Image (cartoon, rainbow, N blue to C red; front, top):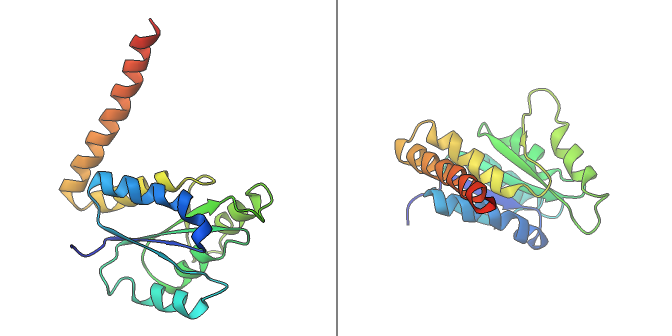
Length: 162
């Protein structure tokens, strides 16, 4: 197995159905990734270790999904120079997902987190692939093919309506 380029982390096992979409699209686009649970609140030392050693292990981007207070993406961003993409997850204790969205979106200056839509892990995976594809031609080609397939799907729908 090749070295993962993207780390997909989530605050708890309950986030997996959402975060699996990032893994699925990265696999489709040919981007190596790893997937694990890293809770900012329940395993802060694990989070610290993960973030501080991610770049040295070859990761290029981290996708961090979290619900509720959703501190994981921001805390990880504060500990690494890698780009972090935050996925707000609508959890069972959520306030319609707004708590997660605002916790990830409203980062202080100097600690950037790219934030996708609520439960938007698929777009987080695509964004991570685009970051890598800016420097790796094979991934860029895979992305171009994927986006072409989106266009073809819409055009097919147009024809189906006639």
